[in-house]
Amino acid sequence: MSETAQSPPVIPIARAVQDRVNPVETDSANTFDLQNVRVYYGDMLAVKDVSMGIHHNQITAFIGPSGCGKSTLLRSLNRMNDLIPGARVEGDVLYHGIDVYGPKVDPVQVRNVIGMVFQKPNPFPKSIYDNVAFGPRLQGRKKNLDDIVEEALRGAALWDEVKDRLKDNAYGMSGGQQQRLCIARCIAVQPDVILMDEPCSALDPVSTGRIEDLMVELKKTYTIVIVTHNMQQAARVADMTAFFTVSANDETGSRTGMLVEYASTSKIFSDPVDTRTENYVSGRFG
Amino acid sequence: MSTQTVELGASRSGEPPRSLEAPSLRIGERIIKALLWSAATLSVLVTTGIVVSLLIPSIAFFQQVPLWEFLTGTVWAPAFANPSYGVLPIVVGTLTVVFFATLVAVPVGLSSAIYLSEYASPRVRRIVKPILEVLEGLPTVAIGLFAFAVLTPLIRQLTPFLPWTGPFSIGVAGITVGLLIIPLVSSVSDDAMRSVPADLRQGAYAMGATKYEVALKVIVPAAISGIIAAFVLGISRAIGETMVVLLVAGAGSPVLSFDPTKGTQTMTAYIGSTATGDIAQGTITYDSIFAVGVLLFLMTLAMNILAIRLVKKYREVYD
Image 1: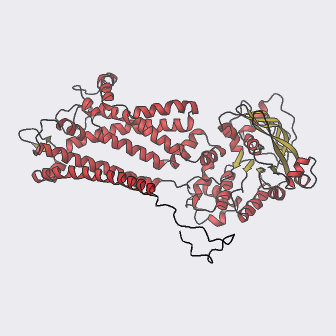
Image 2: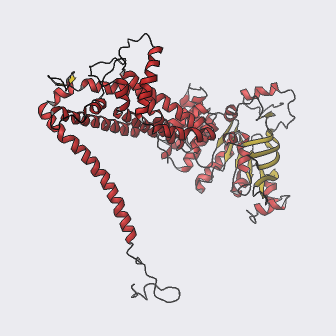
Image 3: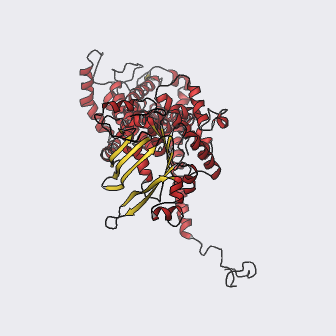
């Protein structure tokens, strides 16, 4: 690993790199390198042969029709798929050259480093404060907890709205506030990467705009990967965009997602190489 | 059918608008509603009937024995030539059973629920859950016999340092009742934990929580109202349990004692052993059964009210 200026925080998972006999050669500007990643649910191939690099401190968007495997692939980056019985990942998911599925890697630690925000805001049924303090408490960072909570809420552009009601239940907030709380909760864990699975699909346009502004702000500190159904959203916020599609196997009825095209967002939206991408981004298919 | 409104609703073809009145009297609907109402009313009537039939002999009892003497007396000897009606010894018996039963059933029941809900594979769940539900329905007399024949000697051998006397022990009875209600506590708590939205579980895992942390810091707090309900159901059952207590703690004359190694009576054991064919209606002994019954009723009622309070206080609200 030859990181210089933007080296990630020193974390136990990074130590594993020293244990590798032959670290895989990767682009040092990449946070993730995916090499022939296939995800199975039982016998069903859900995503096939994805190879791509996800760049440091950028927003990468996964777009494509329903069932194209974009969420499945996203969840394979922080091993959330481990929680689904029968889910299995083949190929290499490399985080700064470390195999996320390597034998010495602890999935719990992976999720400390690679956080996630979900489609539907899912705050815990606790106070706003306790939601944000949840991660730090688990990590044993109990000193200056008030400061940690404030910093995370500021980071999620939520502090001014909630500073006077930190003890209130999180479910009293609006949907957009709840989602920003979930982002604050994620930041408080001090991740390196934030994965967002359609974070605005349950929100109104104003809340969506605020989250998008927030994402652009957050990419200074974090690498962000976002799955979205909303092409305008990808066009507005993402530096890189990956277009996925789905093909149905007529014999088995199973549907397999695949990566069609991955390039800078402007290229995907203005000058795509593949006609399937062109049809999708121009709204002729989807 | 009314057809008086040609101008009002200008339908597509200029015809009169379609009727908006009910096409039939819906007799079936009315019958079903009446049947359901009767069923609901019946259950209320039966409960009222039980309370009234408990109260009438109790009132007769309290005309002869002052309420204060009943509640604070320390000698329970209704069948003696010189009878005494202090209910405390059998109340203490019941509370001892509840204490030991809770000690066994709450930690074991909750742990097994956490295992089933958060750790067990779907396959294990498919096997274990129905077994638990069958255990819930096991005849208590069979469990009582098992406790008398196996558990009591076993516990005695394991604890030779305790001052065991005679074949009966209220402590062992409590432990047995605890074993008896584990499936109930476990199954109801498990249901409560499983009904916590999967979102919350995912959210916690995504923040780097371990299974144990997810279970203890997110799922249990979110399911606490259901879990408390499970405890209350279990404890209510421990208060009401009769057969096990009769078999394991004996039906000998009760002594006011907190010693769990001794045999004694509980409130239910008193009722169960006294309400036999040769007891004459209208006697004070007969009436005393109902007075104890009313007290039992009030205890479980208090238990349930307490539970509702607790649930309201600690519930974590999620939509």
